Length: 196
Image 1 (cartoon, rainbow, N blue to C red):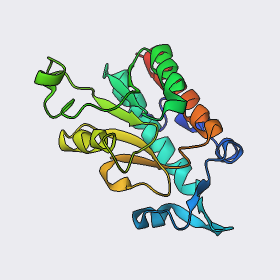
Image 2: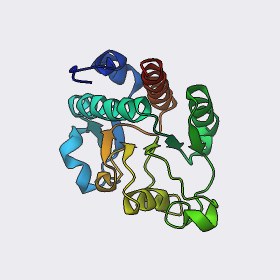
Image 3: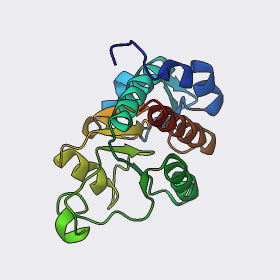
Image 4: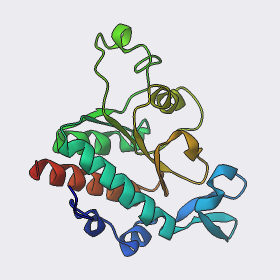
């Protein structure tokens, strides 16, 4: 794996694709996390605009990590607890032969896995299709970080990117954006499995 782009992740995502999918739309400027400032381009009509140059750079790095994990036989867990994306997340995981969580996160799933799951086997990589900042589902992000499990996450302008190892700044609410993320993640996983 000494090649610069062994898995051709640069071909999987382009600035045009990100723009057309609406990845650059952030939240209202009154609803944002100051830790996201380095990833923001500015505001327009009181809404934050996410810098797509930052997005594509972080997306390609995250895809490379995803591909290397899968290539080496690692298990990936896709998490999205938004009801509108439940079916999409499940089909992404099933089509790529990986795992998913789309219901409410059970506390201790990672930190007390032997009691909750009756196993000590944890995923090698967790991919958050959106990063919850409040509530019970935010516990999934914290447990992933506490257990030192590498994580990839789509971080919108209202998210805390610090708990995600490989944050991808982008909209996590628009169906077109989430569908694009799922299509790209699926393609990356299948490419890595083909190259084994």
